[in-house]
Length: 125
Image 1: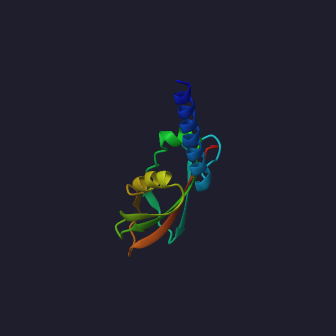
Image 2: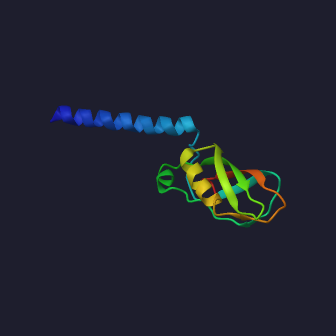
Image 3: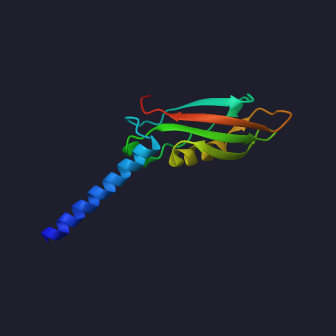
């Protein structure tokens, strides 16, 4: 029975080391996580008419993980979002951010626009 306990403890330590190294390697450790986002857009300026905030995954909240996500956004002339592409940041926060951005609506324009949107998940707000 003692050998089984040691094996379980070792497996738990290995798993915890893996999770912590993953967090550290992604640069995601930022203190206490709350669902606060700030937005910044670069490229041709188009006004956002309807914005949907990304979900902050519960698993990341429990691990106190925040971060910055950069997304390339293709906007059609009528203001709908045609596509998104993750440029940088946490893959988990990125998926949540891209899902939300696909629901955004921009002001109409004469041509299609490519924008870069930066979303910061700030755990200190």
